[in-house]
Amino acid sequence: MTARAPQPGALRVAQVSADHPAPLDAICAQLTAEPLELILLFVSPEADFRAVTRQARGRFGNADVLACTTAGELGRLGYEEGQIIAVGFPAALFSARTYAISDLHALNEQAVIDTAIQHRSALTRRAGDLPWEFAFLMIDGLSLCEEHLSAMLAAGLGPMSLFGGSTGDGTAFQQTWLARNGTVLENAALVALVRSRCPVHVFSLDHLMPTDTRMVVTAADPERRIVQEINAEPAAAEYARLLGKDPNQLDPFIFAAHPVVVRLGDTHHVRAIRQVNDAGDLVFFSAINEGMVLTLAEPEDITRHLDRELAALARAGGAAPQILGCDCMLRRIEAGQSQKTHEISAILRDRNVIGFSTYGEQIGALHVNQTLTGVAIYPPPATED
Image (cartoon, rainbow, N blue to C red; front, side, top):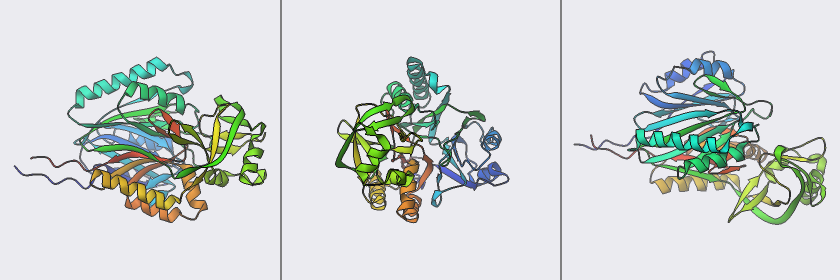
């Protein structure tokens, strides 16, 4: 009996340009011929999403194929645009159950919880010998339902770590799409429950530090994530005043560089601003309520922080992992504004990060912003032949 050396990486990755004339042929040519349990497709909005997902149906044997549109891709060169990224989970190392949740604006809490419990139990019965597990969520990034669904799913999944990303549409904010096995969906979410022979670690990181500048939301429309007043003043004007900026200067670059955070327990979570509307209100990427105390945050150097945190993940696992990541589009915007795109891309490339840029991220029961959230998947332990 001899020990088999660990594989260099558990996941199989392929990448093609969004304008490739036969993207699925190119993806299949790049992937190994081994049986796959699950395929994830992160599809640039520049691609024909319906055609790509239709062509993917049945191309990967019995593997479920989950797909979504992006606000940018994390690929071979780090930050990328105009790409289709395919991530394959080999059947020899993973077992998965996937399902769709439709009509996010009419969620039945108990039904969502019960369905999660049933799928997790079924996966445990089928693959209980695989010692590690996680859940991955892809959800319509324009639905405004991420907080509600994340909390419901976390309640049903119990100790199974959940992470995910809100689907994107570049910077257009018009329409995002998802698909499961060729069926295209909107106002929906996709869930993948995964058990693994490989050690895994779900994580979420951000590089933002709270300051002493605080503000109170005094008027808001929580259902639409709109803040009308801060400190009893028009929201955009007051936010700009606290920054020492002209309200007419507010744009995505300012929002990315000067986010606000809310304290939950012992930690702070970003409540990122998406835009100023015509009424001078602030439109947020995540939940906001009247009476909420917001704290202005300032960034640590994003390059040093990312390199340090990803290096720590490698040390913690004893080997370099592959990372399936959901990276907030605001981090990409900040990197561009600070002229660090190439540096960040090099770190993402060298640390084997693949995935997509999002309109928001989910970790456990929370919907958050301006984070890199994902799962580190380490090489499988050596086994006896």
